[in-house]
Length: 182
Picture 1: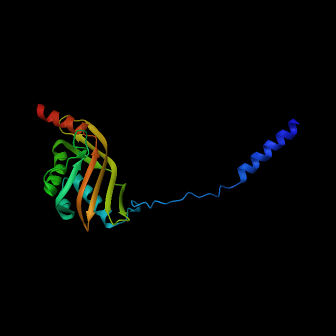
Picture 2: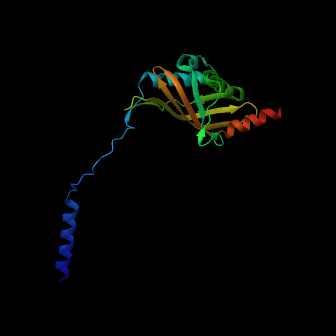
Picture 3: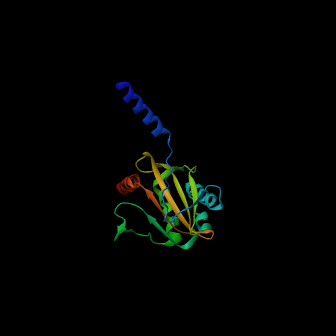
């Protein structure tokens, strides 16, 4: 009886493991947020150039590819109002100043530029995103630091109209505080 029961369990297991599921989930909702990723397009190349010029403290590319009324947001803690991140002031000129500020407090700035991709949405929206590592040496603390950075830029035609960054501001705050002690 035990052998018969064992044969039945083994047979049932084999049959259960070999039968394919034939039911398919019904997809009644279309994903409006779909699109295509690329890293070989002109917008990705422009953002890479923007970052390479940033490292050299050269803002000329900002004036080539960014609209005057650009809206740029720093996604930092305590930089929100009514649940929305505040937009930095100054448009393109303000954005250029932000890039120069880093060079006032840090030397030997480098950025990785191997992870930049452009997303073209099904709805026609275009965004270029950057994930990388920022490194520099504090001019006041002399500390070497490396920080992960995420940038995003939204396009209209061949110009950046808005963007933002996610970065831990701790090293910048420490360097600023050290600059005030001198």
